[in-house]
Figure 1 (cartoon, one colour):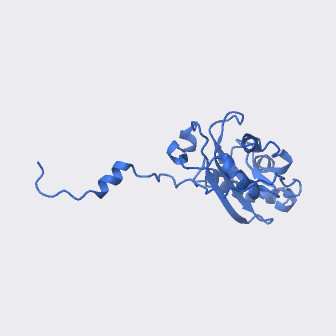
Figure 2 (cartoon, rainbow, N blue to C red; figure 1 turned 30 degrees about the horizontal axis):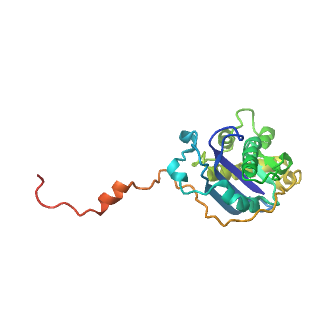
Figure 3 (cartoon, rainbow, N blue to C red; figure 1 turned 60 degrees about the vertical axis):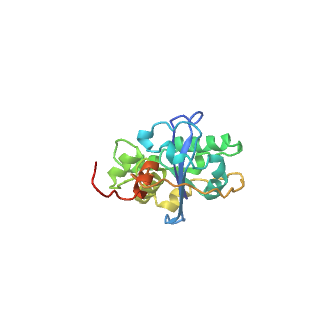
Length: 219
């Protein structure tokens, strides 16, 4: 399995862009194999910064999607993809591959396991957002609206919901693994999101810290 999440500049994949992507690779038993995430420079405005909390400074030195397309494809290849609200993320990732020149890339719905759909089978009626579903089963997501934070929360939600739906192997057998074209890896360095509240010091702050302490009477 590969649990995937993206943060975007807006709601429309034909005109908006992915600005952060994360994938958590799981073994067949659901245990975490490895995590991968990076910010992306969309070469345009970042949209609702108040929601995703990503600023222009954050993505200034981030790779573009075309730079990591091969790396992400290698992670997803041959796995059942997992997402909360598949219709959103799948269309965005597919659009990014097409925009990068890989029109043959297809992320069809039969390769995606949607925890939102599992929640409809298991949880009482109510909102089906990731936050609402996590709250119903006691999962705390302290880094909501970050791609890796939401992917990790989706992993926990999957573990909570799977036993009531026949177990992870039974659920996974209903889906095909994803098949993506073999893309070259660029070896581009990822730029993960910094911890919340951590920001680079301004030039003036760094400069003032290096000045000698004042001595003598103050005029």
